[in-house]
Length: 631
Image (cartoon, rainbow, N blue to C red):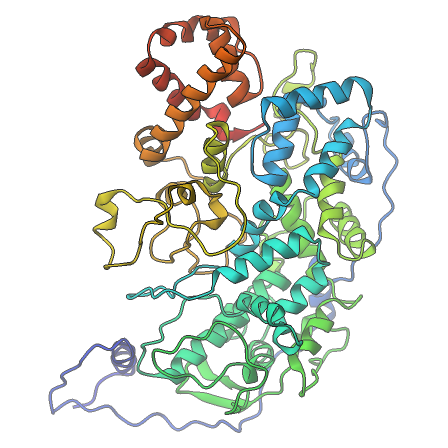
């Protein structure tokens, strides 16, 4: 009795997962269909029409257009934005109020809210120095906390976690070193081209620190105990190639591991040629032995080849390591140096004619600050993904980054100094144009106002710890494990979350919390942290009941509320006043950087009566929309 091919495939996958199979004697697996690995590769040519797609054209160097509204424009960015706004009969929104702008800036750059002292200093600076804002931008760009905040979007892209995932979710020793490497690189403003080069071939330098950077390539989930180690290697290489395509090139190449891309000019051969760049860097695998970094050269060389339908057991013809044809000016694939293929690839990435990397990274940084990218899917510049909202601005930013020697800090600076970034997110009393902006630009496609948005889970936790005075600012080192609810720990295997013994570690910044692939820290989980199963270009921002329940009832929220309450009382005593009005103003200044309104004073006066009510008031403040969003 023969069984179908689909059933045969299912049996293989079960076997690879260590499932013991008992097959009746009457069932037999037929021999594989005869294959023709030497058959020539057939792929569609790259046409002029293909190359005419906006993302495949060379980066232009547009001149900022003249604007009718010049008084409020600070940057070439504003000229490009205003040109689009004026076509719709709109202008930029007025500048945001000082306290709101300062809070926005620090949360964006450092992931922390400003203190009341910083607000007073900023306001004093603004009275005497027209460049006060620029001073604070520069101060925070050079803060060691800059890298702690800016590293998280990259770690999302890198599908970073400190465990393997799957059933056993084993710990990856020293994975935290990659996180610290990223933080340090961003703080040093390592040029982005070098930042990428080290993550692709840092093992080829003489520095052990550079080798750590290659964890980017191998940060995906792994199953070291799988029976078929060749399949393990095959899947890791395919995942790596897909991540390189999406994270660096903005091309969704994963489809092409099984068939030619349905929309983009990427063939299956393109996929396996790119995979061939990394083929010799994977060591010969052994069961239950992890591997998280590249080796300079594998002892057992595997010849790059195409695999029909992406199936390891259906090998096709050999391919030469090369780069995607659509990224080359010639019609054929550009071969790489067979002796140093990864170095050859990284050099190709940053050639003047390669348009992908610069456009993709400037869009990612723009997305961080403005809430929406200049093109919608930050990891897809393909034919079906839609074009950029402002192509001239996108190319100007890409050219600017290149001119600045790929300095990401220069790019951050240019964006946050712009009038576009400094706009109000709400209607100002004197702004009569507000409702016209809502009518003509309802989705803020033209950036006619700053997009109000909720904070990420990590920033919410750090902000709660900061305003309550509990935040431990120690930097670097092994990850920490704050306490988990008992009911959650019971779902884990023994020893999977050993709570850090030192209580001060429980209040370290969120970037240093242990990143377990199969269990996200609860606050991060409910606020949409990705699971590190795949590269994540942009987080979802859901609104669910579990978010409110967690913020109101978690041990962390209760502890922060109690500490905030005591901190406000201590501040009042230092000021030699114990009035309810002073307590309320101190609470609002600490949490919101503003004084309470008359209505809020009336509402909160009744909470001043006793400690339990003050704790409830502080808990309400930490749960408020104003605290959980950036304006």
